[in-house]
Length: 278
Image (cartoon, rainbow, N blue to C red; front, side):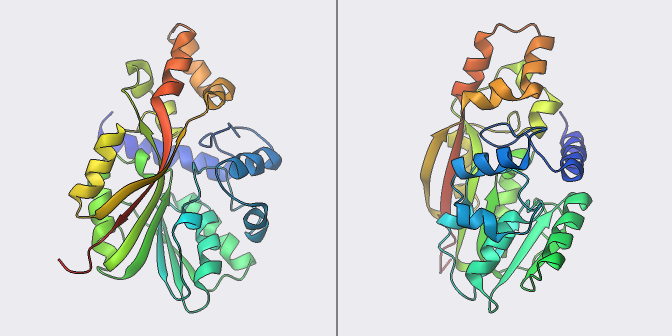
């Protein structure tokens, strides 16, 4: 798919998710699922019961593949930027850690998500959180202004991942940190998945090979880049999610293809630092 088409289908897909308040991007499919299913899948990827209760109702749409806030070692007074902030879930968790002296900026390209996040912030009186409409390939944030950049299962959706990491590097202060949870591949996906619009929205076909993903972070200028955690993407996600199943059935693919896809996909948590002196 061409870059503009990818952005269009992703924007439209996530607009629908914002409206219906569920997703298909977690390790266990919460598509058309109840809030309990979303809560369970969030616990599985690293969120505590306390964290899930601490955020406004409706901010957790089950879109993540990890908990970048838990690994980011946020401090009182930090300025945090969340790329692809959705309904604000990770932003609200970060806001509690940085306190009144800190600030959290969420950036998302979907107007419906921004509207939902702002509503959530207003009803829960979050005064240190701001949501901005914009693309993560062109972040609407000033140079050298952020202490920590986080992102949760979003960069894989971008057709310009190298540009995203360069933009993250630009907005970080010298000595600032990047902490990302995302989906990557251990081997290439079958063409019938790579070319699927539905699979792209579900965080599968936009993913790239792990080595390329880490390489893009280093090429952007980050140092001390390391994978903090790596988890196989549970096959139950594909087995339970009607979208991949429909794609496979439509293409008359062998049942073994489902397992092949599952073995190709992993969830990783990656850290990188912008050097203090350049």
